[in-house]
Length: 404
Image (cartoon, rainbow, N blue to C red; front, side, top):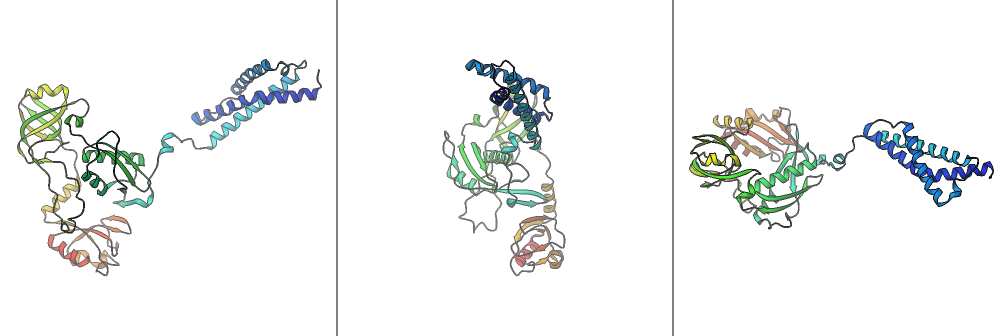
């Protein structure tokens, strides 16, 4: 029989060999259980599991070399067991402590969630706003026809504004949906960086009506009196002699393109890229409308006479109501830039006496890169700032001539 010191050394050696795997398992168990549940695994469970794993490892080693476990005094096995237990308990304690030190709210979504740089965020009415800029050429999506040049140009030169308080992943999704709806694209892929610069790949618009219908819908064309301004995408209620049917407008015949309002700078911008045309709208009167309705209501609609269309409201926009009221009162809006060495350069609105001198009201000021809505009299103004003013047409013309 070997001496006691030799048996102890053999026990330490055997304990280290068989305790590596139990220690690793104990660390993972302590870390994972604490991180996920916030509760520490009981030490007895760690001891039982470690002994079971060490026994399996020791048995495999004994098969390879029977002399490893041969000892008449059992000192070797006792020392090895103590080494395994202490190693497992220590590893479990370190794993538990590590899980307690790191943040528990880490997730795949948090790791992949990106946010905008504060440099590209503008404050408009106290809320953050970001303007997305499309950089590089608009690419094609493999398997689809190429996008026409006019649509590429419109995407590149368009003004795309979104709320700044959403993650980049959500912002990419919103920009993609907006491009797809506005240009009727078959597919859109958008990638944004932290400075709101977008790389866009798109697929050409689809020609078939069936490609634009939502799942579960069928297209039905009817002839009736069509409200002026009815356009594709509007939600309507079709009133027939047999009842009412809710539907979405998929197409309108006998239409004209909605003209854009003339601008004073149209002559200067004759060579600038044109914005994409708006969706066609109905001129009113007798017309033919293609509707997307539930398949179960197709027969009832086709078997009835359409009396009229009722366009469903999509909500109340108070700003539009305000504009309408001001226009009825003979007021107009104007956007202008403050010129250098003018009466507004380097003074406040109170000192300039805008309301008393020019008879207009300043609704918003962009100063130092930030917008201020309904500015007070102490609002500073300098050359290069942008103003929105409201007043009569003659007063606005005089005001613009004075400050520009």
